[in-house]
Length: 193
Image 1 (cartoon, one colour):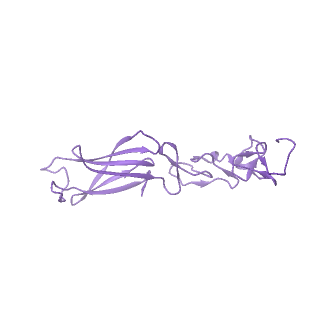
Image 2 (cartoon, rainbow, N blue to C red):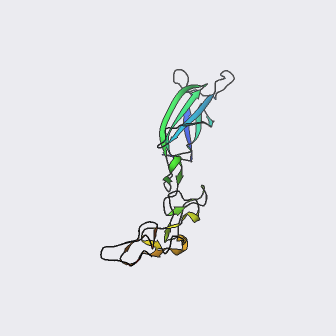
Image 3 (cartoon, rainbow, N blue to C red):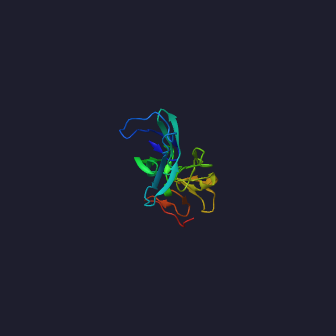
């Protein structure tokens, strides 16, 4: 599994024209050719492709590792070249880490109900009576609406401290206020507030 944003080492072995592995690093004193690796990515739902050079390192005995970090979730292709000629092609798709959800533009972020203080921090749950909106909340201040089963007395109230359990006979959907809550069959009220 290739996880977007995480380093993955992709091994390869240099071989001669007869597909026999060589036991030396390129370039060498007798062979000036060089390997290069190119990564092409396209976020899911996008037809645009981005190209970037990818580092590789010699590990010994004619073997190398491409240091692959796919920046976005979606499809990617890794091309291995020897002096500009493609000698290998690897295509796959990258996914978000298990605790993250896919966001627009190939980014990964927290699911609704969670937030991140920064991209390198784990997802944290919003207060029990509130939820983040939309997916990908990047700060506790994004926990600004009440989750299903709760409501805010007014739209101006802060969800982080003002979400109230839904009233008997009321239906409290995601981001409900007293004015927007719906009533179950057999219940009525005089005014929206």
